[in-house]
Length: 414
Ligand code: UT7
Image 1 (tube, helix red, strand yellow):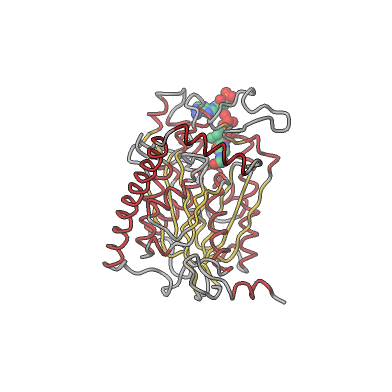
Image 2 (cartoon, helix red, strand yellow; image 1 turned 90 degrees about the vertical axis):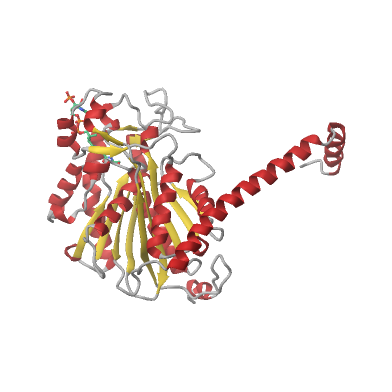
């Protein structure tokens, strides 16, 4: 008996509506946000011993964006999410799930996804952060597509959002020249129209965990290597660039080929590859080993550097803006990075039936109202909690002690 189908037939969305499982998960909205502050290679050469010539020649990067004091992973993510909802003409209340791929959340918890959920007023959505470094966005889109196909969700927001500048060791010229800040988001929707996410190949090799990382809470010896005492700094990124470079060039070709096979197409059918933007030379070698033209790779690393999990959705938004993706095109994503992790995916871009039109005036107003109501709701709930706890503090201490004593006697094992 096919239990998956039976279970799916009885599935309900998070809003409680009974639904039949959708066969296809399409990307119907997209948006990006980058900080205004531009840091050029010359600006970096005032901090560490490097040069514009070296950085451009070895990486292809000319400049990157750096978050201001008032910006964070979640605030950049929020802007990207609002733009994606606008393109999809989806209301925050319609979202069933929010997944934020990030390595630089403000907190271990609450997740950046939960902050974004509350700021949007997406009160019917579950939310969590996904940690798979620069592969995170592809992992997230796969999770979203699977959730849609299972029948448990219909509309999912997936983000890649980062403030890499906050985890840079600004004395380490081998890493600080590479990274930048930004966010990208997509909305996926259930559909009966054939296409959307067709395949995904997700992989990990934890034996390379020491090659790229950010020591954090609970950091301790991994395979006898003491994370902090070996020169790595708490909360700062370290990388063995040469080894990561070799790993990246090796996995891109293999995983793209597998994702195409899994989708039932030849790699030659893919119109555009939107890769993680780590180093222009990595894409050059990948194109060579795949024997494809380098122009098939979308690249914007020159303007944003490596924005980790945000780099693929940002590049996707710019590819769409540049008219490089048309209805029914096969496109591919490929991500690789810390973990080590890597992931490839083939998507058949929405046909006109699933490609959004211009957002309706009413829905635009409803979204704005949702954002305002979310802010009031947050303020009200916080105020009522703080009034509540003030009352508790005002209650006589002796009475509170008596109540605790009484409770301890009644429930000795609590
Ligand atoms: O998103 C996660 C995935 N990350 C990546 O894919 C990054 C992969 N790695 C890379 O992109 C490259 O390895 C780097 C850009 C990080 C480094 O480029 P490289 O061509 O591998 O340089 P290298 O580390 O082999 O260093 C070559 C030389 C060294 O000098 P010596 O020892 O030959 O005298 C370095 O000290 O370049 C020197 N160097 C620099 N010189 C000027 C290293 N960094 C710099 C710098 N400016 N910023």
